[in-house]
Image (cartoon, rainbow, N blue to C red; front, side, top):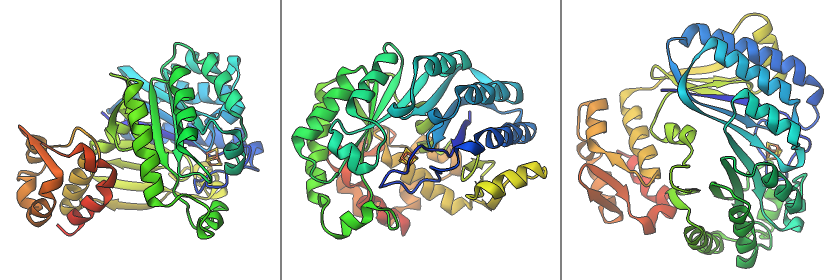
Length: 370
Ligand code: SF4
């Protein structure tokens, strides 16, 4: 069953590491943008109404920066235009600097049952460095409002001056505040972002230092009862993100909004990254797609293997055979032989050994060559 992703591209302020499609100075467009998004939901709904939707995800940008009635309206539109499964997972990303009790109440009324909160770090100085608009204390306030809810906290590694003690404080804040899921990502300094200068100046921890922080964080997360199900994602039992699992299982998804991408019927579509163009297209009655491609069988096989090996669930030979009619170990004979020492096999499942999951990218590179 496919998932729906909705991109809300507005933010209060641009973070120093951000290269997402997000506009810190265009909040006044929110009403017009959301009207277009409702229209796009309707257009895609007409095309895909027979699909049952199992997950909905509001990402951004900062979905919690706009008036919550727009999110409520989007959910109403999704319910009208698509079939939702009996027990869908509906997530919204929230920035702790933009939350209130009323907002959360309206999200819940709209059917949202999972919240993804950007904590990043418990150290206020590092939050300031990242250009985040909130403090650790504001995160705690947000977590208090979410008490008893299913919520995830994002934390980052590889920050300027970050020590193990900082990682400990951050993970403990996330864990003790009741997060059922924690995403622990290494910062990727992207060219063109302000933080890239820090990277060029050698002010950020290097690869080995980040690895040490990761290993330390991983041990702490285990201690707090989170299991790793993907290299950067940790959950309490049963609280894994179904929306992301669908991506990693090469499931179909419908992306709506500026810069969103979709994958269904073995085709991939990308919407325009330009806000004006997005709205003009929709208002003229066209889908705002700037790129579409059919995924060839050989690429589909590679995607299947690469995505499955990212998770601790690994590749199921049976599922691969059902999808492609062959054995993945034959299709990727050379890569499989070269990477065998990093893999573990149990029944029909092959996965990367725990100790090598962090360096999965190096292992997966072999599969690019078939
Ligand atoms: S809140 Fe998120 S999307 Fe917005 S600027 Fe910061 S990192 Fe980018």
